[in-house]
Length: 369
View (tube, rainbow, N blue to C red):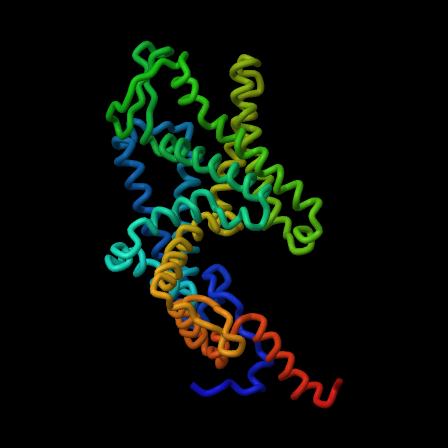
């Protein structure tokens, strides 16, 4: 392999092959849009069919929750559309394929059978990589994450009519929980299990509020966060989470302590905030929720490369860069993008800066000391 010329050193390549940082596909925007639209329509149609069938031909569907259900259909379309556009980019497409290939590789499973469960738990569930940045940020993110997961597990099935709670007497305290019309368990609403069943969303709100409030406070105080933040992208999601959580708790407060006073207004405000947030998810910062699982496959791809001791060393200082397959994958992405400096993926960030500086002094500021 020939050594890159100093002239090409003036252009520094991307420092990472992260799929979230890749550029969009340079060609075929119409075909990408068409595929994304078709994917969105297909996923939305499948969700509508699942709602109809799962609610037993709408017999278990609560018409009062129709705005939420419609919002989830728009959410499904937006997620499928945005995801299709995302993986159409060369870098994301390559890592997406490599991730799935590693995920379903029997050879990888035989060599490291516990690798995937550990990565799902540590990278996706407990997000240990955030702890290296800040323990407070990690704790706040965990509160938001588990609160949102709990809320989604309760809200979506109820909205779609998949979960129902019925009482033989009409007012309890004995209730039956049914999924798709089949009885799962019976419980007393006055005992601990019954309280947890009926206040799961309140628990989720209590988790989300301190986590979102911490990040909102940090974005108002931290200079680094203030410098690059955008209101619609960084602050609106946090405000939306807090509004949803607070209005949800106020609904419970109204029904328990105010005998329903102001309940209708709070219900409308809560519904509007939830619908807005669901529609916002595919096109704002919340989209990383959908992207993050794909990163597990990328981490597995890198991990299996390390198991083979294929760690690539920098061509200049011989410090380890990353796994050999990962570096080669990055080079392939740069070739797909018609970038003429793919060989620079074989240099560490420090050496790239040094060589770029040398090229600048030699060709732009020649003779400058």
